[in-house]
Image (tube, rainbow, N blue to C red; front, side, top):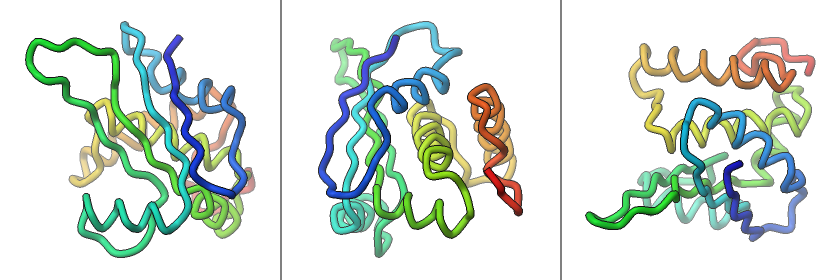
Amino acid sequence: MNYIDLQIATQSDYPATELFQEWVDAALTTRMQESEIVVRLVDEAESAELNLQYRHKTGPTNILSFPFEAPPGIELDLLGDLVICAPLIAKEAKQQNKLPAHHWAHITIHGVLHLLGYDHIEEQDAEQMETLEIEILHKLNIANPYLEESTQ
């Protein structure tokens, strides 16, 4: 099993630690070694600050992924950090007519895939990443999050 360090820096609602564990484990099923991931749940102000500092974009974002690169000669199982904006996840789930837990699962898995090196800047890479997200979510009995009419 993978290790999750869950940090709560928000007053907003968020899923139980066990759900984060399930989602992270599902995203890491093909990875042979155990990993540690820091999941930090934040409010919009902290998300906006980090988004500006690291991506040079204004405003909060649903998730930021920070892969960990160990210095030469140091071996750690730390895969990286995920920073998730809890109030924004709630807003997006409502706007997209999704169950909040399903949207949390999707965003968490999306972030873990970023830590593994997946990206969605180029269309071909985006298709590969989205296909993998859909497959992982399907194994968790969660519908395709990219369908227009989502009645999850």
